[in-house]
Length: 193
Image 1 (cartoon, one colour):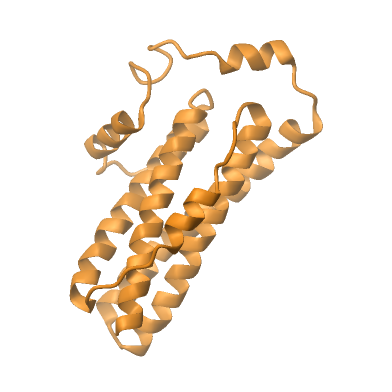
Image 2: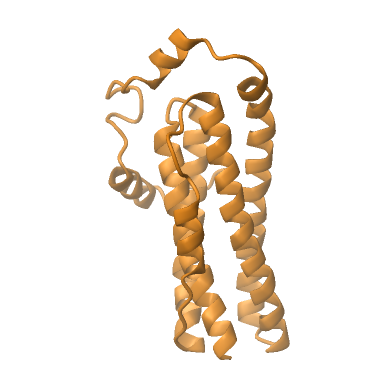
């Protein structure tokens, strides 16, 4: 079972990375209401997955794996502004979500081999939610790519869009990761997409 413990550690770390990345993208592209709302919602899912995996890790023993942190550090490099920046951020989120998805697939096979019904059910549920995250990312990339990649940006509009937001433009004040985490915690029982 040591292999499963290590993979559960990888999944816990990967879900934390995905949650933090979703929050960072939501903050960076807060002027896009669908991106902000959906990314913060999916960040809650990933944070909840990490918590659930941690509970299972207590049953299967200690394990560590830094693979997801290495991947997270390799992604989201450079300045990301305007439509191209959004498409790149969504692309990187998709890469991270696929990493998580493959972790769920591998762990599901181990849970089935162990005949652990509780773990099979939990992984199946969390894996299905990760599938929904990936489907949204594919749809968002498809929706944004044509405009961002084929149409030259209007420089004045891009400058206006990149200036700091007024405190009232996004839920009452400027968004910071800590504020988003606090906000997510307050509404964690609310269901959405």
